[in-house]
Amino acid sequence: MTERELARRVRHRLAALRQAEEVSGNMAATCRYYSISRQCSYTRRRRYEAEGLDGLKNCSSAPLYALSETAVRMTVMTDGTT
Image (cartoon, rainbow, N blue to C red; front, side, top):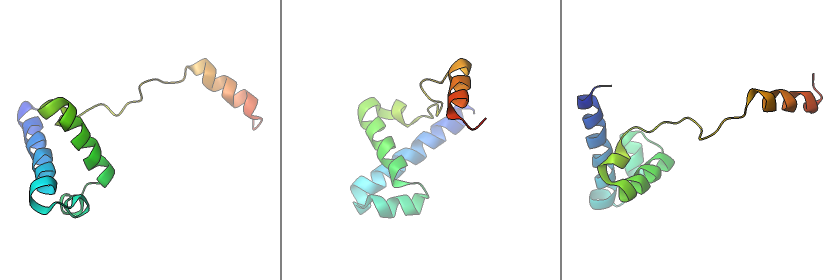
């Protein structure tokens, strides 16, 4: 993603937050208009309040940790379905 596309997404997300806070005062209606979930909008608002514009950039959706291959095998073996 280019820097220009990233800036456009940040502006779009900021516009949605401002719409909800300043114009409509209704997060649910704003989310329907922008086709985003309320959970997503509240997460973005929380990140924006904590980090500013950097909080509106794309973040990794990867888990913070992952089970090791050994742990997965042990789970399958103790499950009793194999």
